[in-house]
Length: 173
Image 1 (tube, helix red, strand yellow):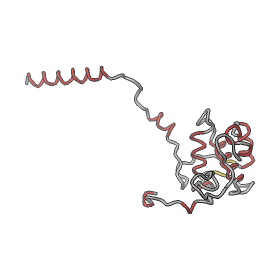
Image 2 (cartoon, helix red, strand yellow):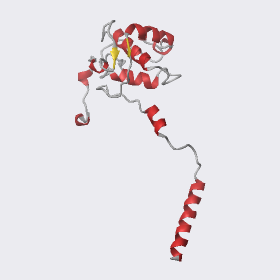
Image 3 (cartoon, helix red, strand yellow):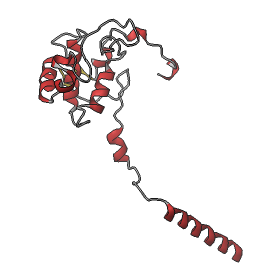
Image 4 (cartoon, one colour):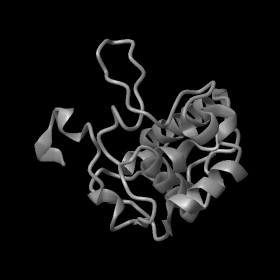
């Protein structure tokens, strides 16, 4: 019985010493920390939040948030590439834009909410993201100027290149 206590004490001391050798950087991730980053949106619309936007509202947000600084006037190209236009993809180096390459309209919302504006990601409201998504889709002539984009309408938008993707694991969708 005494040897068990000695063994247990030795193990506890060893664990404490091992912990002391670690740099003790960071902190445990809380549920609220995870929730703030759990913002994925799937192609079928799973994960889309409440809210809505129109192309006209998106045009205002595009100007107010300085999107043209990177994506050019009306999204037609700047230092960070065009959001608008659909040149044919006839070679590997061809420019890939939302209209000629992206397979799902919900990806526009997901990427914009997660990464834009570049200098302050995740600072747009959900309504602003819906509006920017509507603006980009309308500029690419994928939706009309009076269409409203929200969690019900966005997954129904048919992207021009949607049928040119091969789903590797369709049973997982």
